[in-house]
Image 1 (cartoon, rainbow, N blue to C red):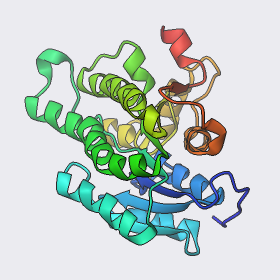
Image 2 (cartoon, one colour):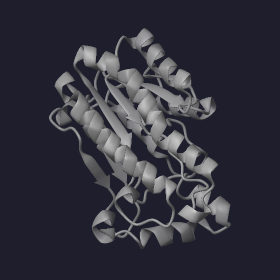
Image 3 (tube, rainbow, N blue to C red):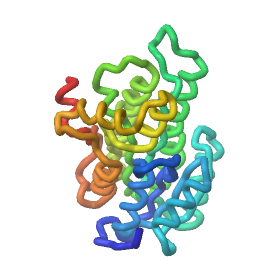
Image 4 (spheres, rainbow, N blue to C red):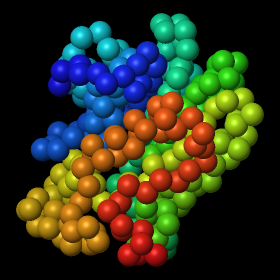
Amino acid sequence: MGRIMSGRLNGKIAIITGAGQQPGTTPGNGRATALRFAQEGATCVLVDINGDWAEETRDMIGGGAAIVLPADVTDEASCNDIIHKTLATFGRIDVLHNNVGMSKGDRATPDLDVAVWDQIMTLNLKSMFMLCKAALPSMRERRAGSIITISSTSSLSMRPTVAYKTSKGAINTFTQHIAAENAKFGVRANAILPGLIDTPMAVERRAAETGRPRADIRAERDALVPMGHMGEALDVANAAVFLASDEAKYITGVLLPVDGGLVLKRG
């Protein structure tokens, strides 16, 4: 994708975790966000446990608008290293976009393995805490910064499995705590709650696990949404651009559904 700027994030340094993606026919939320941030003028630090996937995202951005940092965000030393390398390279962090997450192996409470609970909580929630902990001192010192967390509408509605929903509900609370705690330092924090989005994690994984055709999975998910279709990763990315930009300079502590009305239906 070419670097076409309208300048909403011009000059900003943005860390995006989960910036690569597993193979699929549609973009994932992290990659779409990285591309949109770069289009709007940001320099992106692309973090992913799979360096090759992050390199693919950088290739799509083109030019010198991004660097890749392969890292495991479930490891505290790696989280600290992401922040330290970004500060050493660019001198500041304007945006921290926490995008990683998983639901694989989740079950109803009596059936869920404790190790799977720990794995989901560590990736979905603890990683965000560790990155925020590492990034906040420099943001506070500069009295500026936007932290964006990716939650889910499942945090607000019924779900047959326990760990993913619980982790996302905790992300909502964590984000609002970060917002309240750091408002006096000029640091904002907001959560995006995607609904049913057509991403490789949502469609390709389900197709692989169940053996069902992708078209059937998409049709089933489309039918659940009041607007009649799933969203695209671009819908999530555009919300992130707004929250990262100075247009949202007076917005903090918000839980923003991007869901085609799904919460209204489930609520």
